[in-house]
Amino acid sequence: MPKVLTLPKIGVNMTEATIVNWLVKEGDFVQAEQPILEAETEKATQEIPSTVSGIIAKILAKPGETVQCQQPIAVFVEQGETLPADFKPSSVPKGEADEEKEPAEKAESGGGALRAKERDDRVKISPLAKKLAMDLNLDFTLIAPSKSGGRIEREDVLAYAANTRSIEEEIPRHKQPPPEPAGKKETSDTLVPLQGMRKVIARNMLESARGTARAALFISADASKLVEYREKLNRPGKKISYNDLLVSLTASAIREFPQINSRMEGEAIRLVREINIGVAADTDHGLVVLVIRDADKKDVDAISGEFNTKLDRARQRKSLMEDVTNGTFTITNLGMYGVESFVPIINPPECAILAVGSIVRQPVVLAKSDTIAVRPVCTLTLVFDHRIIDGAPAARFLQRIKEIIENPERHIE
Image (cartoon, rainbow, N blue to C red; front, top):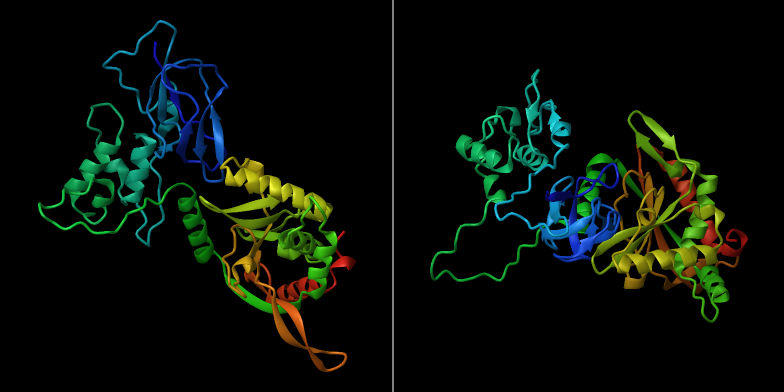
């Protein structure tokens, strides 16, 4: 009897994943728990193990395809068994159907939100169809399945949408584009699907922009001693980066200002005990924030080694969940690109983010002698959620970071 393998749900918030690469091919024998594919989830690219044993008769999800959790991705058969020509894998494997009998959700009104009527009975609808109905702002409780007694499928939603004609502008996003008229000149535009990591970044940034009361503070710091201290720490075979130093000194400042290490939860503010510093890193496949956990308890060498290990994994698209989750404060540094200052977006659900610009030699007035000297200076920008912390304590925190940068050996272990 053929067995259908579905995409497992890894993590509470996972709803879909993009297939990156299959580690096996059709005809291969696979043991349960054996890694069989790499998939990009909301947080990282990771190996997905098989939940069944057998021979892969057919791979249903191709590389680059985005698949919903619990949707079929492969079909297995036993040794000596062949897959029937008319075999059609169900959208939901046996035993899952009862879990999807969900009551119609009642959404809040306003802003174009879907109004779903309350019903005493339960609606049978596939996850993909339900998501499509929500995207199209349709009340799926009004949609009849094409098969009597069956569940609502994606095609039923599209048919209902076309018949109502109340969402004509939305339908083209879910249909193939019409063929080009004969002789029409092709354009040079390219349409790139918003998926994978780019989709996650877009969603998180929009969530931050809409859901936080952003405020920004700027301050300049004399980086002379920071530059000297880094040169002192560097040695053959061991190179300490400015990011390594920034993680260490920021963790030291957070210990003195715990409110900056907090987040909003409903009508309350949670002060997080752990100090987990995220560092924004650029990779060939997009932005990733690598998290150094318990940064206040590690010296610079340990921070440097951990960050480089996680960066190597990220560049190979092999990040572990622990590499990119549970951050409490983020640092983003564009100094290496010559950017002197910028205003970043807070990484939700965190309270604040520190932006670091390039170190530039500038004329500076020396306070003690009242003379002018040329010094390496960097601009720091603290963007914080004003719902959680006020301007004065945020300014004191930023001022403390400036003080540590200007005297790093006193504060960095």
